[in-house]
Image 1 (cartoon, rainbow, N blue to C red):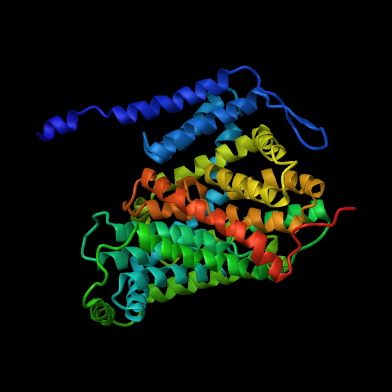
Image 2 (cartoon, helix red, strand yellow):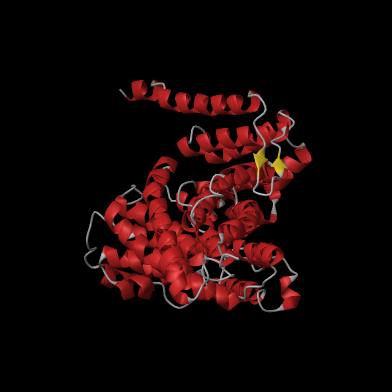
Length: 488
């Protein structure tokens, strides 16, 4: 019986594998596509390399969603196809696999590994459970609030890597071992979603905010400050956190309403751990110091010149210098996740450098150049939301924001509402693992498949667009944000 099951051919896998290949061939070998034309009459040609980038984009997206091969292997295919079909040279396509953002993710995962090995994670988990109690609904809320708060002061990737082992410790007390459950899905997917929601509130949560403000200043010739951004983003970010809590209480309602005796068990386990060890103290000092330095980059000019990746990698080196980690610990790094983001960076740069992303953005936004201001704002937010699920959110902003800011005056739309609406959706890619590092980190839990993540992401993305609509039409105008400009 078992042998028959083992030898059963997976037709579903073959169908989706061939679908990806077919989409690649269809796009790569199709005749030249029409130019994209912006409102000023400027033409954007889709070159042969641009068509190739879109073809790679299609096969990678299909294989990622349906996981026909391990997600890291699909990422390797991204680099291979670029080289084999002469879309970009090898030294360019594969260099992106070691982009600073990929190394940042590596260092963030190392922090999570240290927290787990030293026992700091268990201490934090037990303390949290003592506070939130035995109700699984309150455990959801406690995890989501802590995750969102941390993203106000540190990068959401680092937050996810720090919180992830804490969630493993909490889930171990649920009584189901490593078996996937609705509570497990809600806990890990919810953490990933909320990390994105919290990261939009300050410039410290992710790099996308600083990039967007740079484009805004260049096009509009006006600077938006750190606290001005937080003023408008705070209610939206926290509204999404609370709505996501309600969302997961519905779609991933825990099998158990309470975990009887959890508070006492957590208190007992915490007391058995004894006093803080030397490694726990050293790990806390190293990580705390790195977080402070990264947070100060926004305010100290001398630190701003130092890339955040170099700062966070200092922690990785110090973990080995002080013998908190050893060579064997490197075997526990989830290289599948690292490769996933390496490929995502490569396809993102490929779409940008070949002009394919610009061609898509202009074609999309030009469709709405005669639309009502409200529809135009939502169209931009929607485009960024879709793009940020496939490529790095910084690239999604870089592709769409300059085009949108040029079109906006023709529709009498204020640039501010375009900037903020774009930043909201850029921070919350709920459909694909490659959209954000927290998504991929959560996936390592084994609680859900890529297909399940995509399925939950559809209603979550609809919820996000409803919140953006509410913000643009009601919340931001009440708070004083201009959404339209007078007709001359």
